[in-house]
Image 1 (cartoon, rainbow, N blue to C red):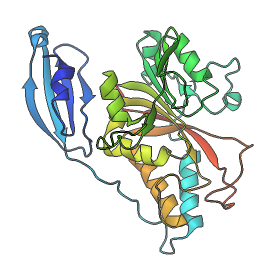
Image 2: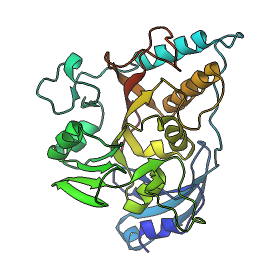
Image 3: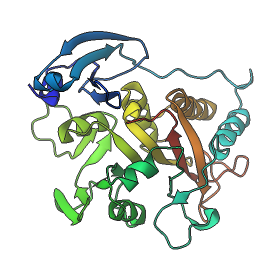
Image 4: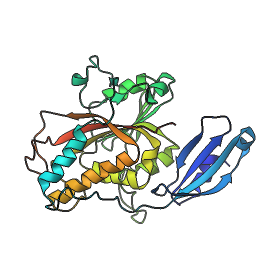
Length: 320
């Protein structure tokens, strides 16, 4: 039995770990269920022919998480300005430095890179995987016109998959290492009971499982205000453990799809989500705001905040 076949039998929040004797350690692969807290039970090991070569496959399951943990209010007044100040400080203050930002454009000075860039510092694994031409990139968006970063990483040797529901063809190979898929990432899978639904959206965990991918070195997401619920899903299902760098554009002019509550509660929820990223070992290495965008936060001018920020996070524990 192949490891992926064994894993598909599980609907529990499980992952498959492959421990090779004398190798680089354990690799995780997700099942179809959600993943959550750090506590885990181990069931196994599962063995196949690879065990004779020193590989042992172990299925590990974790307790489900149903909601994120909201951070305490900044003050007892629950004011929008207090919550916004904390949130804006978080998304505009890099937590780690990155000396080697890159997106394939000719001028790579930090101030002229534009919104999207990866970190190629040698202290993180991406530059080494690019050098070995053994890296994978997922790009999520809608009607993407600028794929310069994706093209740069494909030419550098990465396997790049762009997911865009507005594409005309279901799947198309644009370059040697760059594929386009007419598919959107959602925070829930389609309802199987609806026989005649026309949908091209799936959860990222489901797409990873369908494609047979264990890890994504770079996840780029511009989801046009769906990013908050999608990020929540990635947190609750533990998918972020499989991601090396997260490039995320956040839109602040309104709460976002299916995000409820009054304005202070919305900003508190946003901040709590980003705190979950930090718990998952992600650190902000870059923040970019477009001066041409309106200065609106929840339809108001609050602390002169931009309506759009593009954030770059690196998983400091990423050792695929």
